[in-house]
Length: 244
Image (cartoon, rainbow, N blue to C red; front, side, top):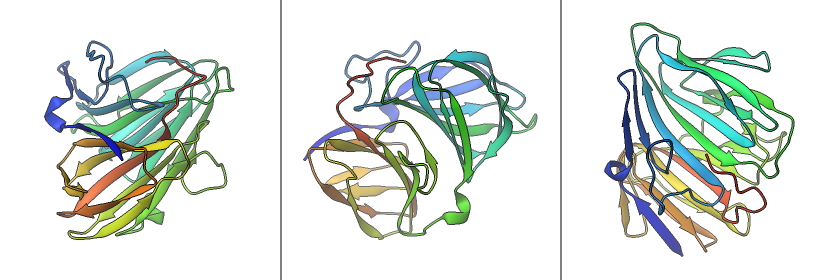
């Protein structure tokens, strides 16, 4: 088993007044050649947007963009004609493909919105853009792995154009489960949203990340009540090698 550990306080730090963001991997003005992603996983941004503020309309191409709200309400609009509010308990994906523009604004004037934005390289370039939003809270599985994303439209959660599976683990303290990696050649990036956990002899705290590969699976144990995101992704980035 191979691993790479990223402590929460080692992430890139962006302060823009209305936006506070922590970057697990190189993004915008934060650049570290040792942190260009994990396989096809290219971005994990931990964003907090002040009331009434947000990201104006901007373009993307050939990227699978996943948003996972943690608190507050995020207003979305895009060039495909979609307009929606996403909140904690939802997951949203945009396949940027041949090109889209979109905006993400805090829907409330009096409180911040916090969300994870995650970018995954698409399996191939030039696909037709698409949008999907699903409420995942209704299918929550306490003390088990809940699939929230996959490559298959008929599976639970949203789907993307990549051989990737995301799962949420909402574990009570001392809960232990074995995670089986979904596909040969994939690795798993484990991101602790809240609480703490152990994988082998590695202790993980809030917002710590651990990449794991060259193994069939691993045991995950919550050392406090915890919410943990597991991103099971191909480690071979070919044929799409675009960078954020």
